[in-house]
Length: 298
Image (cartoon, rainbow, N blue to C red; front, side, top):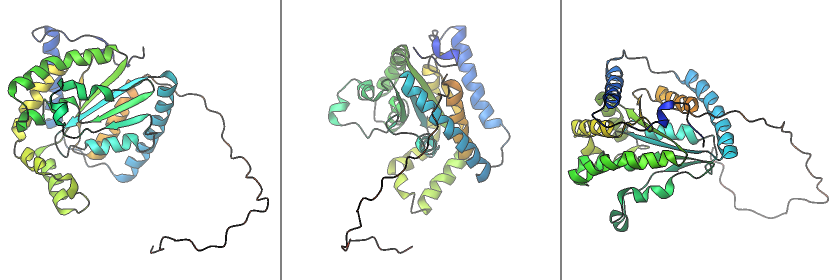
């Protein structure tokens, strides 16, 4: 079974009252405090960002080849507030690799039938098989976040989810899946800036839904829900990793780097590639007919 480099992925979570659980809670708290108290950095410039992104995307290709050969199973969960930058990270993760290996799952609102199922049931069919990397753009943690805050589930249902989620993730990890959970953290000021940009930019208005506006007004409700989620589901075998996403470029590089560091992949040897000679025309000529052509306006 393929195992992550980080030993924390391999041990079961202790009861919440144990010293181990207290250390976990302290670690999450320190990470959040450091995120909010660290000195602000100048936004990363485009040229160094693009150079580093290119290097990392080459490594993702090597990771892909290793995943296919080893029939590894990797599941990556992205959560965070609206505008935290989940889509941007996912796009850079997947834009230079095969969609048949790196598969993105972004489920719509559940149907009436799905609402009658066991909650985790609609997500299970999307988990990775051998040779796949599955990326959840929001996941089963909808219940701990948006559903809880916006009243789409009861408090009892949300609390029960937080009790059962670690058990489900234990089963996922025990099946040989490398599970990574990322929370992208954005400040209130940066979230406001990004939402205002969506209002003013015709390319981004589709990202602005009535739900986004309601969510924006409930910042501290979401903070409480996030804290409860971390407390209940940040386990040794499926830990949460918090990424500062106030600078989108740094966040993308940091998350991709973390994934590459955590997966024990290796570069596979490759044969030199050269183009073969084209065949001769053997009497072929272009037909003399008028085609409907796209106007060349540019």
